[in-house]
Image 1 (cartoon, protein in one colour):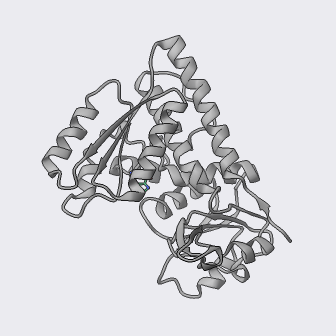
Image 2: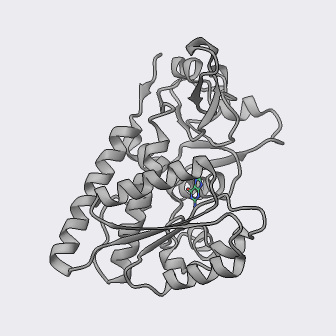
Amino acid sequence: MTATIIDGKAFAASVRDKVAARVAEIKEQNGITPGLAVVLVGEDPASQVYVRSKGKMTVEVGMNSYEHKLDADTSEEDLLAIVEKLNNDPAVHGILVQLPLPDHLNSDLIINAIDPAKDVDGFHISNVGLLGTGQKSMVPCTPLGSLMMLRDHHGSLSGMNAVVLGRSNIVGKPMAQLLLGDSCTVTIAHSRTKDLADVVRRADIVVAAVGRPQMVPGDWIKPGATVIDVGINRIDAPEKGEGKTRLVGDVDYDSCAEVAGAITPVPGGVGPMTIACLLANTLTACCRANGLEEPEGLTA
Ligand code: GUN
């Protein structure tokens, strides 16, 4: 079997088109422009790339983008003051504090200082609790994008066996909650899981989010299963020339694609969906803040 490739790049473009259409409508009918504020502390190169890309796409869908770039030695007090200002700014509907933060800053404290209604990352403990109890919340972007692709591919996920590899607060745990919400039978596997290969072999859906390059080989995959690869790992690629690198996921793409029914590539799978869902969440937050109808198909 050769797997169907789930094209996250194209799917993300269609999500952004939907967001842009609703943004245009809200601007015209309600005179409101959704706004996303991104706070970056320090000069981590990968974070700088993400933030630039987020800002560009925010503007492309017609929203306002506010970037706050702060020195690496910014104090917790100063950062909290900026978050508070954004919480109280009616032009800002979504707030994202780029992680990781420098070591001297307490990420939990900062994230939990964000107004939960503006927490477009879905990391605030209130949103985590709302998601866990099946209530309306802001949903973390990467799991939301993964869920959208799964629903698009399968229609209903009800009754499917899903294995989530990885137990992070950002991906693994919320992904498991979302799959449970769609009536999957969910297993969260992690670095201490016994007989991991056998656990993964039972899955109709595998979501790999462990941050270990090409960790899942094709012979762990049940024939016909759907593989969502959340990993983005840079590895050496001597075949491309000296000093060259390439991006790979958490699954070994070539061997998994031979067995799976469908698979997301890296790059071009889950990655583009994350920013598209951030824009979708900002739009959702703006609609909720203003009592406007929420966009369809863009939330969990
Ligand atoms: N750093 C890497 N991914 C993310 C994300 O989704 N949200 C935030 N806030 N920081 C990140």
